[in-house]
Length: 150
Image 1 (cartoon, helix red, strand yellow):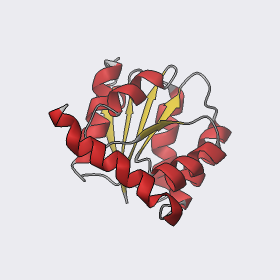
Image 2 (tube, rainbow, N blue to C red):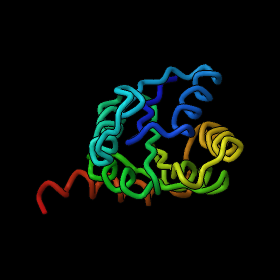
Image 3 (tube, one colour):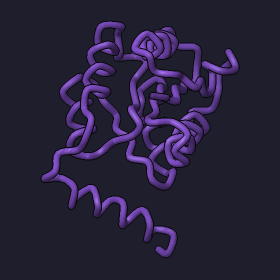
Image 4 (cartoon, rainbow, N blue to C red):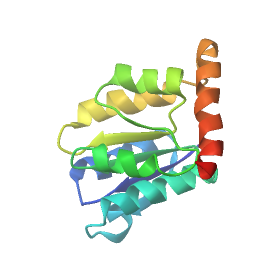
């Protein structure tokens, strides 16, 4: 399994998340400040994480900024991305299970090590979407395909 992990600044929690994923046997592609060691624009972090997910170069993405909102908005601009701003493990599982989210957006301000572990473990534990939600997820995918014409 492979994941893109990006951050707009040198937040301790972003580095922790990358290392935690690696400890789970997941190959990490660093984006933004995790790659450069310097602050990086949050829209670019969201776009770059989203692009790797959209192109199928990684299985999922994790994007971090101060609130998590900016990277979530930016990632959701990329065709095929369903980014979810998550604050706990139940939301992480639900985002995967019911929304087929493929980018996890997190707040550097709110996410502790323990919470990050719980969220990541919950996120990666969901192997497939709830069959009862496939039609709704299909609507998102259809809209994504059609939005070029709007």
